[in-house]
Image (cartoon, rainbow, N blue to C red; front, side, top):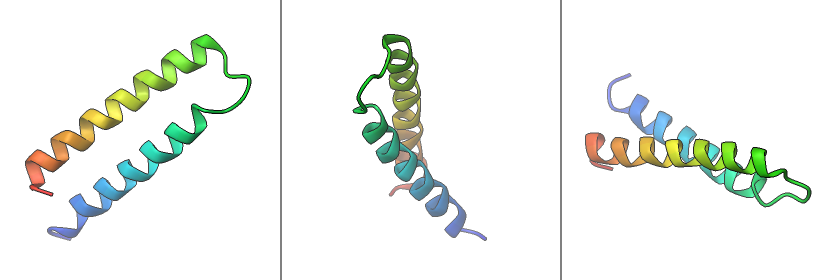
Amino acid sequence: MGGSFPKLLYKNLQTIKHALQEYLMRDGISDDDKKSEQALLSKINGEIVLMRERCRF
């Protein structure tokens, strides 16, 4: 696998990030859901930043 695995994981995180950003804009979202989903989005963004630093993307 070598260098392809980090790129695949990075792409997966980016896809999840974009999907979650869209999902957060849905109608009727509760405050609790919004808070927890924003916290998850923040964690995903942090993982993306770490991957960029580690893998030099």
